Length: 464
Image (tube, rainbow, N blue to C red):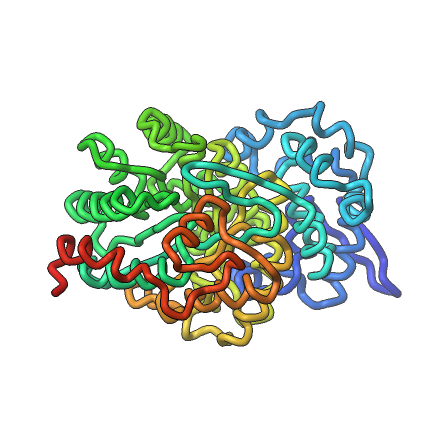
């Protein structure tokens, strides 16, 4: 039992799970689940109590029973007590203060990663304001490699997302060319297929591989099909760079996605065996998002942010090249408005980075949410200031296949220019060699690249 008094009011929180939920900043999904604080006073009381909980308590009180949930077993069995020793004497509140102090450097934060449980990280995020989330995340440095180096300081990468509602090669190629000419695509060229079948997956994989190979672009491709479809494609000899899968923070939620840890492990080894990376072997790409477990009625009584951070334990096991929270994609039932989306995106980035993940953010919203592009500009700018790893690059910021609003190629140019950020070094060199960017990483007004691509596009899609 966790108790406190505020004024003449007494507050009792029966379990750590209940306390965590009540301490969460307000969001519509927690109200929908019936786990949120009843009012702001109860929320403050819960945050007050949570700040005094020792970090060691999370080792003793599993939020989801060990015997019922393989994500819990992964978290507890993988905990490194030696790495935890540095901070083992701290409470949640002390941990916040330590993260914001000069003692928390990139080196010390990297050293404690194996000793951090997701629940510890979720807890501390609940008592942090937005500037805390930005400052602490900025200190974290997570570097991954496949054909380029992702996550270096003062760099911001982009996923070029040339989706098309019918997977039409001409439409995909047009978006792909447009994105490359704006300097996007160093994180990955990733397509969400409109048709989740083997034929469509193979066609898109070969198309992307042809473009990357023909022009020696130092990037990687991914068709975001279900992991079982990607395994079939690998069995057909397809040129698979990254294996994609959406993941969640409970076993039941992952069951609803048709996955488990053994399946992900099989896919990870299959991709490693292909040895397609030239600089490194980080070959997995995961997407997450607050509310996914609740939408599957698989949240196990947890608040949606704690569920989200538990998903990062799943991602961490497989040493991915990229992880991103698709923060506003599920809709206002889970994140109601721009304020909730901004807070959630910065929480997710902070928690993922602290757990050692290369965190990106799909800065996005659906058209029935109480949010607009001004809100996304605020999240984009704050995310980049916090040292975010990558964002999306979608033509016109409007995904015509998934029907949601994201960030455009122009948005990447904006935030790189304002904050002095650059693409991954290998991709940056390629952009300069092909006169898309100049030596100062400014986009040329008349890049020479269209002539470079013309012959290939004619062959690929029959453009005249």
